[in-house]
Image (cartoon, rainbow, N blue to C red; front, side, top):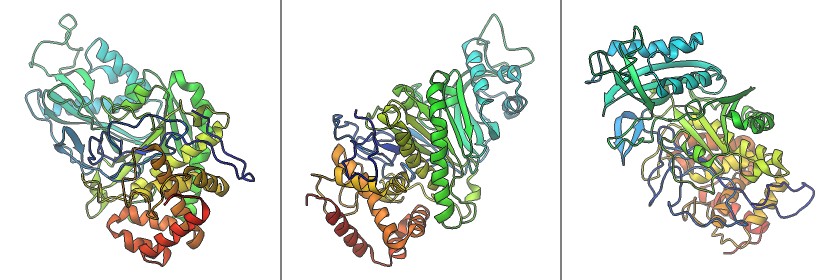
Length: 518
């Protein structure tokens, strides 16, 4: 793959070939609304087109329905759709019940003990409820990872016993990142006093402990497969030893074996974070109620594609070699603060594949800045979402708006590069004068088409800003996230023109700027 290179502003040269797309995943929904044969978070058919360098897809984003900053959060009421469980942002604490339980109070004491142990940084108290052997030693590693994270809130709460497992919520808020606590959901296999033999007949239960946790993982279905909901595994589960770097508005981490990459990139990503946040502070509309843009970012850097595909996704998703990064909004653990119902996003999780040429090329600083600004733009606006959208892919922000905003933010202050990309990525690609995704699928399976769609989406908002100002763009995007059904009205408010007139003016600008096929 050719390295990501940024041409000097004074040169009108063709930009390098684009990279894999970024993606964004719906909060509370580990798979986006169904397109034919679609698997999360791919917005295109599962049979991916062959990878073709020099026409690979550039930045990536959401699938219709909440992929990036997008759309779809559903709920945790034990609801299961298409084999995928769905979490509800307005989850209510539910007492433990079922044959595995020796009483809700017993498991509540266990989870309260975990909470107290983490707060006190008491490793032995934390691992006490876990069965001797592999389970205990794995949780010892989890504890050592957890103490490296700057927590605002970190507590465990027991849920229901179902299908032979106890669900346990890790309710947590990363300091400086999350607006509200969010939830990772575990499935524990457990034994209670009198419920059966000890998992270790020689050792018996730990002294003074009646309840024993024999296995920790994601919530399993009846076939023993991870259901893919609950945002498990998080990095503290996936890695034996975390390396964590904390900067203003940023918590970034990797496996310890990738600490050199982490140290190299942390400050570049911190500057990208400040770039996006400075623009948001300057141009964004005032927050409404409890909803406000993100003030910080949580980023995981990963070079192993199998691990990348598993983070927050249970047993993992089918590999998409066109995807370079993903942003995953997470619902708030307590959705009651949404006011008037609807979705409340607590924060986002960003994962980046560091094997791409954005990270490995000679111009890696520009490449890391580019992907950082793009994904962080998605994360900034994710808390403004008020609806998860529907499984038909409708009801959330338009794809060109969410992806266009991320592209617009990635290339802020780089107008020359943006023009070069428009010229390079639209050569030979049919252009029908429609906003990308209006006449066909935004996330096209064809690499050239998808690249063009991302580039066009960013250009449409850049054109809006050139005519009406940056504040109009920010207000338009914020309104679209909050009230996606009012799309045409929002375009008119931003531009002073009906949608058709804005679209025609922008299409004329594109045709005047670059050679395009009709």
